[in-house]
Image (cartoon, rainbow, N blue to C red; front, side, top):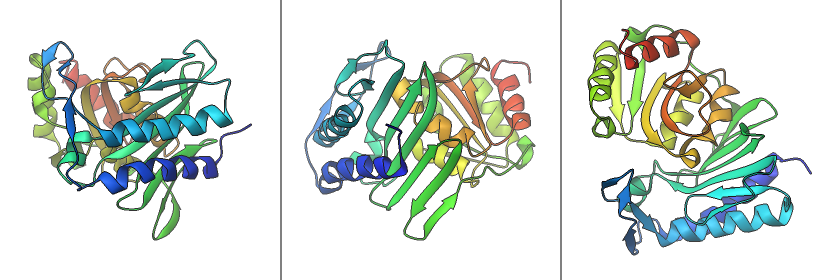
Length: 263
């Protein structure tokens, strides 16, 4: 049974039933504690956990032979050809502070490669998705194709990262050099930044220490819109880690050279 646009809509609706009533509602927040070996505030909410349960339930019913990797409820069947990768709320810090730039991420890998994905933002009523080599977005204004900007020059580019505080050691200096060369840089937005890249509104995203569930769903959305996304070594990004997403190969190469200390 193929993955369809309607199935992504169903997943988005099921997640929204759990997230929207809890957004800006002042619910409880737990701290998952240590992340990446460093003690830091790592929030998780009831909405995260409930949304993932709802998503997994639909996937298990429709694709019982597929594996699942979720941020909150673990993994099953990771040795299978098809594995779904779920982040029920990417941008939990935005969620708990009432900022609507979080999103529900659901991606599908085939033999390790991301082949389909969605990002749903129910508060703004948006769904970004990629299927069968097409990248599209659905909103209150209708449905449209995603297409990257085509910017090739760092001096004309708009750059996003979650926060430069996440870069460690020399990587922070190198990231600062990219910032120095671009036209505009902004912080925050998590998954939303990648979707704005796919839609052509920004040109470059550089991140560090991502998990697979932070990036898998976004890879086909960017690639099918004409963009490029890899790790800092230029290899496939599905395992997470250090990530560069860019509108064009030229922009990607320029950013990667600096992050490697070559620029």
